[in-house]
Image (cartoon, rainbow, N blue to C red; front, side, top):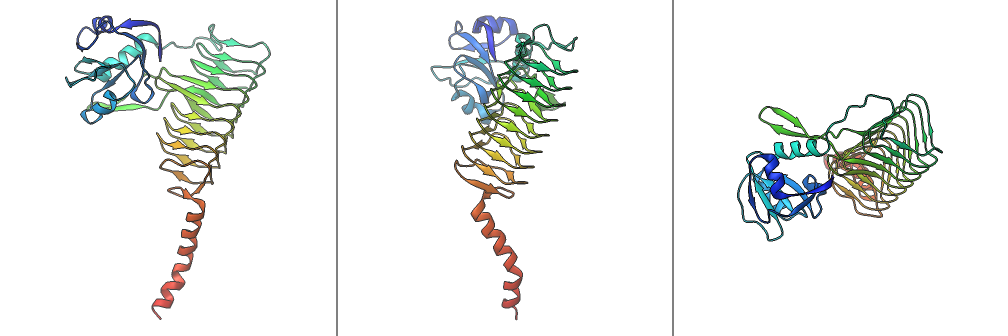
Length: 311
């Protein structure tokens, strides 16, 4: 999430009301992001010691942390007791929740060439480009941008809240979702799909990609260009899908994975690890098709082999 106006580290600590600054207190923070989406200028947080190095080696410039540690030259630490709580409060402060009181928000922008059928709901700061066709009962939530020549069929939800919780002693604490959802040109989204916004970064559906009905795209997922996803595909949060990828029906993809360009995954497969480009996959856990078929053939011949061994 980019800030509309940058803020000094010292000013931010003054807002928090506590915290020890280690590093340049005059540094200007330009964004707030969770660790998976940070860029230079961002503030992030870490509160579990085993992830300290990941945060310190990330692109983030300012890190909320709950312990003093040796700090790299290009980082600024703000030491506080509860980094997550402060991070969540800052996100809410700079992009607060805005309830929708009308069917179409006053801040929504729709190109006059686009068609909206009855009962379409457009949230705050939604933008819809040229020649789009949004069917009845589609809900498009806050900070969604839709390109040109996009079709979204009935009952789909674009920009749903991220399914992202932090476990605490008092149960799961929900992260405030402030990311965007970006649908590029010539995308087709079937009926009953759900595309979640990023927690603080962007969920992106690349140009020319086509989604069948009842496809679920998790928070912060980046889908490449010209992909095809059949019914009941589900992709876990933060996964990156390359260009020209085909996922057949009921394929499940775990979170935080990378699927290379030109990959095909056959129906009902479960993807649990990164998939290399230009390959075909099948099974659970998904493996390269030729190897998986050889394994299945071996299993089918196993009873006969056992009979011969014990004659």
